[in-house]
Amino acid sequence: LVSGRARDKVRAWFHKLDRVRNLHAGKDMLDKELRRVAMMQADLSPVLEKFHMDAVDDLQLALALGDIRARQVSRLLHDHAQAVLQAQSPSPAKPDKPARPVAKPRKADHASRFTVEGVGNLLSQLARCCQPVPGDAIVGYLTRGRGVSIHRRNCPSVLRLVGMQPDRMLPVNWGHAASSRYDVGIQVRAYDRKWLLKDVTNVIAQAEVNILGISSHLDEARGLADIRVTLKVSDFEQLSQLLAKLDTVPGVQDARRLG
Image (tube, rainbow, N blue to C red; front, top):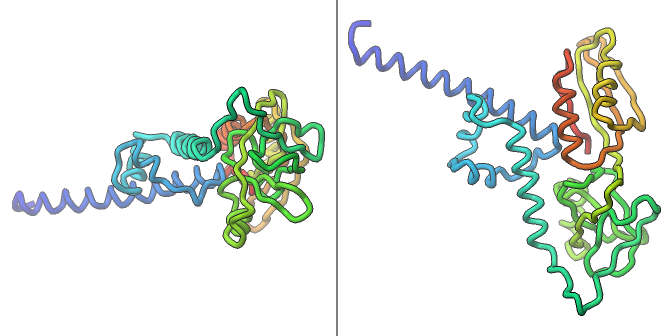
């Protein structure tokens, strides 16, 4: 190049090109992780504050450059949602006052999974639409005739219901049952190949997670298998770790939580 000014312009052009590429790569990584743990609607401001960033672009660049791992983002969002929920919950009753009532679930194996603050001995059940597990931020919705339905806090169904009748939303906290297991659905999309289903179920078995049901569908035109699995997990952390392991199975394009 003839002049230093021309060389500077070329360097600036390549720098801008690299930035655009990294932004796209970081956005893909962020979107994939949020889809994986069903947090696509999450507010990212707690993550930006934690890493002293001004904009989502900064986060996307950091992900693309490897300065931050995608799982750090989902973990921070999860922990922040839990902290907010705990801060909004009523303070524990003092010793000289009667303890707040615990909601009676429909089935015995649900005992002590969650407590419903200040509403008496109402029936309660985990919502099938979002299948909350311990570690999820949760809310209760008072239904007509079926007691309290427990949803993940970012569940589209409960957000719609609460938007119409906000007075039916109730504060809910998980209990401390040590051995409970919870139903949750996941989806694994992968390029079809021999032993694919075997490899997927082996990863689940190695994680010591029980399979309640499994189905698969093949898109022959694209050569993609869509595997749906219903599992029993102990909490959010076990589910998150399993999804990360499934992502490493050869041919797997995406492993995510349903709901």
